[in-house]
Image 1 (cartoon, one colour):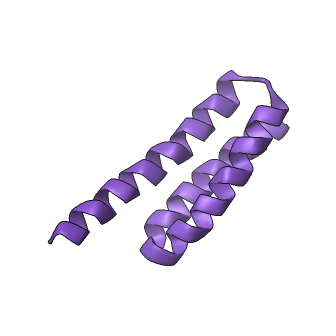
Image 2 (cartoon, helix red, strand yellow):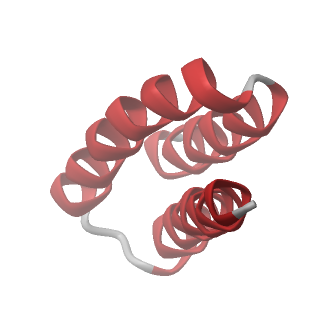
Length: 72
């Protein structure tokens, strides 16, 4: 059961990371900052997708949307 708790904490971490990127890309106009965050999220998103399936895809999508938002 202890493993499930760790998986849940990891899921919340990646989920919050995705939304942090989404909001930071809206509020900060620094493209280099957003670009760096996007690639870190891309890496984490791929790893997370491998473990959690749909949950990882949600985080990956949130990061991609945030990056597209500042790119426009």
